[in-house]
Image (cartoon, rainbow, N blue to C red; front, side, top):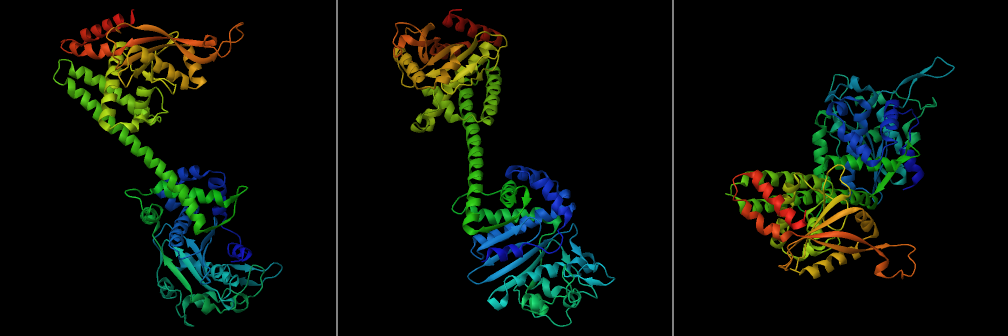
Length: 556
């Protein structure tokens, strides 16, 4: 279909609605996809229904999406539109083209006199004369005059639709029922038809030249009106229902083959934003022609965005459910002890902190991998069953809750990506104290555990090494086999950081590397002994016992 003719269909010889133009320039033209989505989502119902420019713009896009659904179903080859007014759809094989205008009102019904622009052209005085003429600028005239671009004599069948958010009631002088049920676009129009008689009075074009439809379009006004359908859509008061219906129908097509997933209102608004941004050129509204493959590309982007959000939601839900199960098992093991309620309080505080961490992109998978392998670059989480994962994480949560009790605060996750570190959040502490909790995973002895720690460091980025250089790193080791490991040991861990300008030392030598002084703490002893403290009647004594044990282990 010739592009110049299509452009002609989307242009107008008459001035555009200035309120609509101003609205688009102010609220749409400079916004991104997501900003338009947020703007539309935050609009209150009374703003959508009560502000003419907003309601017209919004409703037009809902109608456009309705036609997108038909485009996906193969009824049309493209949907073309411009932000100010018209929509054009076409089936090129059938040489059928439909022109659509969308009109809105906050009222659910209108008398013909209330929407006189539908049929009555503006009465204008020709410059330099006193002669007045009715121009062909009524809604009907603007719509059916587009038949001049794709004429019936060239084999095209044109259809015309005025899509309204209200019903035009019948009066003694006007009865448009013949058009409101013209679903087939082929009603015969009688000479006495009220719309025909009034539109015939619109005789001149924008240049004040008298023009007839036979000369302009190759068809009489009666023949053109026979293909006019005045469709009553959802009222503005029911626009939410309109959006919901579109969401359901579009979801069926976007997520065909998927189960239990659908779009929501924000996705519809994002789609509008995506279309608007594609329709803007240098900040000015232009037209956009969308074919089925192009629409599928747009919807693919929308689908990926939606799936990503669902994945995040599911992961968050899964994260929280996992934490609930693990902490439930943990508390179940100490239920009935004297200090159960106090430990339960600490467990819930830690759970809330984990939930906050999840909202900042944390997840159970990375938590497990960093505890077992010291890095998120691991597939270990997927190589074990759920019971093993949750038993392992229970040991992590147990020691963490005890550390929170010992330091009387919730230890925060450190900023590094490798060792699972907890940061002591005390102001003025120099150097910053980091406590890394690591399980050997395979019941290594101490020597093999140290080797594992060094291997973790070797695989870490240099930035991770730099992050640890000015910190006091203590590694609380879990699941080791050495019975003699019952006191903290100071170990130097290798890094990738070179010592510069040291004469006589080969650059490749480990002697030419900065080392990190760390303290390896036997966490297994804490695991074995803290249960005995639960027999105490007083929680303060429990805390004192834990601190005493910690001091014995770390030597201070």
